[in-house]
Length: 198
Image (tube, rainbow, N blue to C red; front, side, top):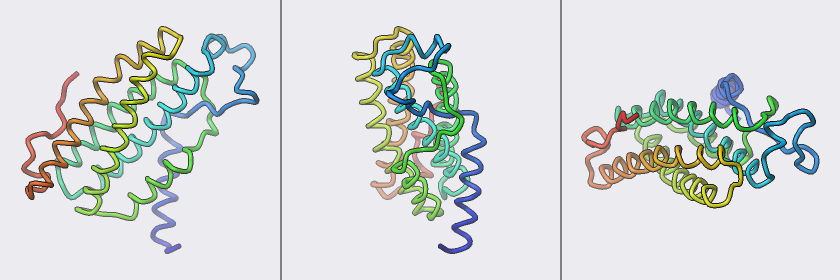
């Protein structure tokens, strides 16, 4: 592995480990920790949703940071900034819903996707990042929509309900930037830079 890539991956790993988010790694038989009333109230399916949501949220924050550093387009950089801000906020809310494990590491598929982005720069990064955001948000929207119908804890269900519009906004912003690229305008002329809705 080239030295530059090793250094970049090491820096990324350090940055990811310093993020104020972590995930709950399943305990034996996926049982809640003794004396942890917040986890004890959650059904196994609810905890599974929260873990999957936090994995996705951490990946979006890490990829968004890469976008702010590596994208050629200001619109893609702004999208990355929005992803970092919104998903970091969502991750903090997730942590309040489930006990977390500080030794958490992103699962291999998420690490592989981020590893691929670290090897790109400029316009090639923009295209790969937008494709990943498009695919990732489609999966996240399906995950959250299913959770709204299936999770048992009202606070978890409410979190999914409140977060879904943000995910849909991210998906629409990403699709607009992809469409602008498809029309040959790149992403600089795209009007659909991330909207600052609250």
